[in-house]
Structure formats: structure tokens, C-alpha cells
Length: 564
Image 1: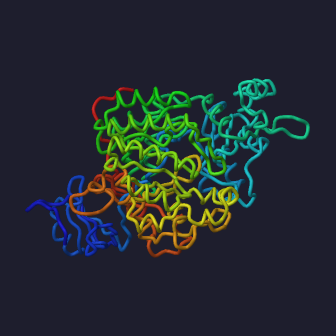
Image 2 (image 1 turned 30 degrees about the vertical axis):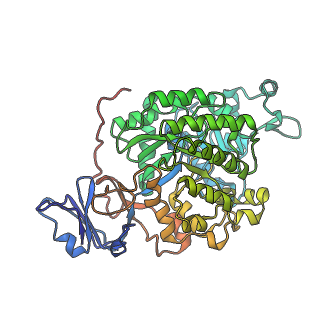
Image 3 (image 1 turned 60 degrees about the vertical axis):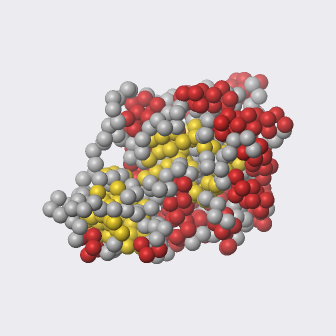
């Protein structure tokens, strides 16, 4: 038995007769039968007999009946701040198996909401998951919810508005002309053979434009929505997340999650990586963050850790769309990274194309010559087409890589854009692991991927797109243990918490999930359907399902005075 149990102290809870994957650095305790929890931390691990002997009259005893337990999952790159604000307004299509069922979900939501209120499906799905192999038409959305404006978005590629949504946003030929004069490509508005607008629009700029003009929920609605979203993540075993910022995630985006935290209703340990709200305000917003956002403010549930993925909006490349890296961009990157290093902030930076990766690493190396960044956990986000020289540079800087299962939805696009040979090593995960470079795994949900961690984990095992095509070469696929480590112990490194969570060892936080199926033994096709049936955050029960549905969920623990 391994224990941090004080003499004569009784654990509050013991979990017995399980298969507990601890991710321990001590191989002797890599898998145990039982775990004891005292307060918010693991106090002992060992055999069921050893742990049961620690229990006393006031100890709650839970029989796991052979179920698999894993450390609470940490999605190391996700966009939950933005998603939480409108979660209740959205219909999620991640688990819909046909377009027909997706449209039916919209109809059900319309029946629950007042006429005129918005209904949104904003990413997390792919037409290839439907037998129809397509998205909805305006007419189908009209039929599904005739009295509500409906907006359905696919990745950042295209969106469809129903007639009510077009009317609410004033989408007509006059608007097309106006936006064309403002620099938008009018071809982004799809028309039919008669030249009439179909309701379909293409491209990220228009989606941003529409998103800014849709009504925002009230702050109270955003708080309730964020709390509901965090409980949904608990259902899937997620107890931690690093929010990377993303489009529409500037300084104004954070009141809802902060107030959810203050009320004790945030049930996912959230680490914020912040950045500017829009192009042109990057340096101004960064200066404000550096001046008014000290990194030691917050607690174990919510804290800012550094700068998010968008350094400059001009450098936000996409898989099929590189960006222009000129001298002005390089100078701006250098200036911003220098300020961040001087203030000892960590940095998580978006880069898909090698030209962007090279520009970022070059700036980091120049900064490192003046301000040592090797202890700051700077990391590339995405970074699929890494070359050997890039790996060498990352290692020399003490940096890491945050990888997501984006090729599950976008692998076919990547093969078209980069070629199958490049995609086969994008990213070269086996090389990163062998070199000891920290590798955190995540989803990049909610727009471009599913938030389901087990769907993402399955991709890291098989590298297969939703259309059934292979992406990664076999040597770069992960074992189940490696993939789970990337979503737990390795993920904790990126927020400086590898000695606080991500493993189930005595003294560490009792964040854990009891799984509906054994991730390590079930057939691969079952993995995306795994859920948690019992989730703990800091020893507190935050989610239950059969057969543990009778266990009481912990009440909120407010953090001081509410300011809403």
C-alpha cells in the first residue's frame, strides 16, 4: 500500500474492488484495486483489503464491482469559455447519427423555447457522420423550426441560416452589396440558379460577422449555461481544461465563467490562456492583460496561466489556408513574445503550417536569448507538420506540443492540402514521446471538433477520419496507455500542475472518473461511447449515473460574494 494517510486519520471515502489506473511514476502502483480519499486528496492506494482496513464508522464505502477508474481527464486545448456562454442556446449534433435526427433535435428545442428565440448548432459535427452525407438546407431548417431563427455551422467552413435567421440579421442583396464594399467576398453568400440567396454562407470572416450580431444571452443565462456545460463535461470524465481563447474570446468573454466559479458551480478545473478579442487590438489587449491580470489570482478551480493561441490574428492559419509571414509579422510576434517572457507568462501558440511554426519558433529563440523561457512551459498548439529540426528546437527551448484529434474531421482536407506523406507524420507523436517532449492531448472543441474525449482518444489510437480514411502512419499512433497519459498526467504539465493532479497518487488531488466501459480492454469501436458513471473533482462528487445514481452530488461551494 502507498499512503499519505496521517496516523489515526480516517478517510472520508474509499473505493474498493476496482481497476484503478493511477498513472503513477511508481510501476508497482500503476494499477491498483482501491483508493482512499481524505478531504480533497488521495490519501492511500492499494489492495481492496488494505484500503478497506483504513475505513472507519464515518467512511463512505463504494464497491466499484470491477469497474475501471482513471484520473480525471484534462482537455489541454478546448474552448469552453466561449461555448459555455451559449450552451443552453445550442443544439449539439456530436451524437446524432442522421441529418433527420439532427433536424428533429432542432424541432424539440424549438418546442421548449419561445417563438423568436435563437437556436444554434455551432460545430462539433461532420456531414460524414450522417447517411445523408450533407448538412441541412434553409428549407429543412424552416420546416424544423419555422418560428425560430436557426443557425447551423460546420467547422469554420460554412453555415446555413433559415429564413427567420436571415430576416433577423437582414441578410438580403443589399447586405451582400454592403459587405462587399467593406471587403467581404460577396461570393461567400451562396445563390441558386435564379440568383436568389440560399441561406448558406462560406468562410470564417462571415461566421464571425454573424456571430457578433446574434443576440447574447444575459449574464445570468450565461452563468447557468456555463454551469450546465461543465456538468456535461463531468459526464464524460473531464475534470480539467485549458481554454485556449479562440475567435470571439477577448477580455469581454470571461465574466460568465468567473461568476460561475464564484458561485461554486464550475465543476471543471479551468485554466485560462487569454488573448485579444479581434484583429488590430492584439497589442493593446495584451498590455491590459499583463497589467491587470496577475497569474496568482484564482484558485484550484479557475486561474489564468498565460497567453492563448492567437498571438496575432494575421498568423491564424488553417489546414488548407496558410498565412503570409512577412517582416512586419515577425517583428510584431517578437515584440509580443518578449513582453510575455519578461512578465514570466506561459504561451500557447496556434500554428498549422510549417511556415508559421518556423516563424513562431524563430521568435521564441530570439526571446530566449534575452529571457530564459525554458521553465515557462511555452507550447505549440496543433503543430501537425513538424520536421526533425522543429523537434530539436522545441526540445532546446524546454517547450511542449498540444495535439488534438482534428484529423478525425479534417484529415481528408489535410491530405488534399499537404499530401498523404506529410499527413502520415503530422504530428510525429512517436518522435515527440521518444524525445521526452511534453505532449498534451485535447479536442479543440467546440467548433471544429467534438468535445467527447473518448472520440478524440479513439482517433489517437487509429488515426482514422470520420469518412474512414487513414491519416497517421502506424508508428505515430498511440497505445491506449500513452493516449490516456496524454489526457491526464501529461496534460497537467502545461498548467504547472504535474505534482498536483493527473495521477492518482497519495497527496495528489482526488480528481477521477469511474468509466462505463473499460477503456483499456473494450473493442476500439466502443471507445467513443464510453462515459463516466461517477466523477470526482477534489474528492467531491460532481456527476453520477447508474449504478451510482443514488450517491449525492456535492452542493456548490461559493467563492465569496457574488457580483452578478
